[in-house]
Length: 111
Image (cartoon, rainbow, N blue to C red; front, top):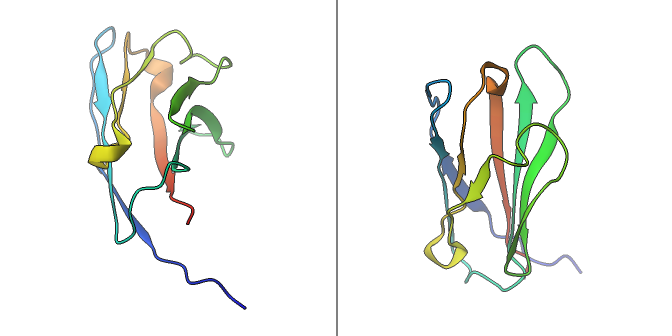
């Protein structure tokens, strides 16, 4: 049989502007008709402007935030989300011109 799937609606800002050297919050809120399970995972991806490849820069799973230890964000990222409040936001500190690009927040809430 096919297990029923309920969508998760994820909301982010369409555009975020920051100042070089300052911090910026990338907000990600979500809504699910199902309860938020212990297995919820949140992944942030970054695609630099002018490139095709997207890299994972942050992952939240099993109740723990994991900042990927590759790439230019590793020392500059802070987890400020709270899945129980349906919030998957992160902060990037010390903005650099190379941070320009597309950030994507992906939320999975397995049954």
